[in-house]
Image (cartoon, rainbow, N blue to C red):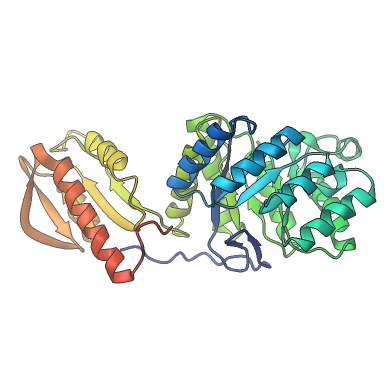
Length: 371
């Protein structure tokens, strides 16, 4: 029983990263980046497939050398997801991965040398319909900007970004998106707010180097949540010192919490107390793990007692209200005569949730693999 988000998106131009539209009202895409050695082709392909399996729509790969570019050629042949090549300084690598079928170049025009080199990359991108991502990071601002501002500030990040934007403007190239990332939430949010007022191109959001899984997820949720709630952002990446698969999961959870996008089950569960009539925590954790493959948007409430249980169940697709021995079951907000034995909750609920997902898929004619 999901409802539409009240958020009004910032208007932006649209580009395409492979098959994925970005900006211009398109769904906010969730992406991640591999952390394997790109030259280890098998490991990188396996990680990309794991990222895609949990909903990843765009994957970035670091391509620091020509050897990595040759590895990229092999990777490109074996995966269908749009790939972004992360390149710094060497324009020849950008030309090579463009030849090999890259979907987007993450390269800052001002960092690749003389204008003839910049023009060569931009002309190649234009000829092959490859967009560019300008990526500004608070930790690597240009020396003169650091001296001018003394420390990273929102204005400093935006000034750096606009230098690169101006280069592309002079070359009459508008197929790009921009990020202005920082590890500090307020610094990143301030920079994105300023930039959103200055350009029409899509914005890629991220709190860079956010930290480990727990702290990084919280920091990203706070920072990106502030921006997304204001309608700012067209793609997101959750930068965690963790498995890239977790970045995708957290990304969709953030979008789901703001009702911007829904992928899979939104579990509504109580934090538990002495009123609980069954193991709520164990039940929810088991169901989340078992049902990761379901992409159908649906609300499932699992409440351990009858205090809040009925109210949550009445606004959920499926609901469970804890009672002694046999718990109450709701479907589409309606209390069912059937009760579910507390000693078999997990298996029974898994079956019922999968059945409901199948009904919703048929009703909406959404293939099960669709995001």
